[in-house]
Image 1 (cartoon, rainbow, N blue to C red):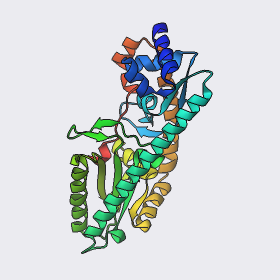
Image 2 (image 1 turned 30 degrees about the vertical axis):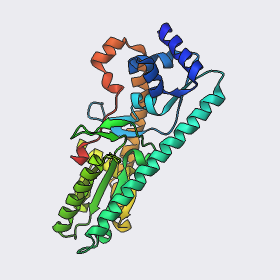
Image 3 (image 1 turned 180 degrees about the horizontal axis):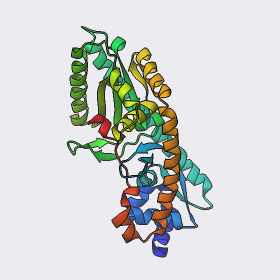
Image 4 (image 1 turned 180 degrees about the vertical axis):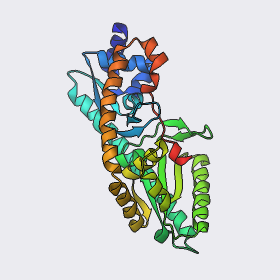
Length: 304
């Protein structure tokens, strides 16, 4: 570990404060080994930017963990510097935070332009704005979207970082034809954004009626919990404010928001324990038993 620490210090001395991903690329070592070495060093300072928020994971007791994961946070949202160079560290952190916020704004703008154009194209028969609301959730609403290339789940094609999680809630009075056309139109846009070379963005989406939301706020299955968490964190992207506020009211009245706050508190405690375990346990044993604690997870079940 001492030799690794010396390599880390030498790279930062030569090139200045950098993200975990930049450090990893220069040293070409295992991510867990690098994270442990940085955390265990007295000379290396790690500065995290942004926020942590609740993520649900079947593999975790009680389901609650924090996002970003330990690895994603280290690689993408953390700057490594050296003691005595606080100014350099803060300068790099400000630049990184500005970049993350710009990525988040760009993805939010793309999501808005996509759904507003789509809604306008469907307004010929029924008013989409009257019968549906489009809710954006995920990394974007926390201004934590990233643009690190990753494979899209179903096709394996590389996409530009964080996806755009969109939930479309349709009122119960709307004709089934509108629900069907919304689903078809968003699917077509999802494909277009995936395959267009200069875009390569991913929309994860679901279209559902308010009746489905009323079922989900029972919060009695893992899928229902994921759906509620996404609706709770979501903000209105386009469409009916009335439907959006009814959805938020359903969450409040069912006590979902309080349950999610409890889950988040437990997730923060779990994160501390997970980090302690990964720092103290033998690396080989950690890999065999608990390496999932280090890596990201996807809340894909709501969008399947």
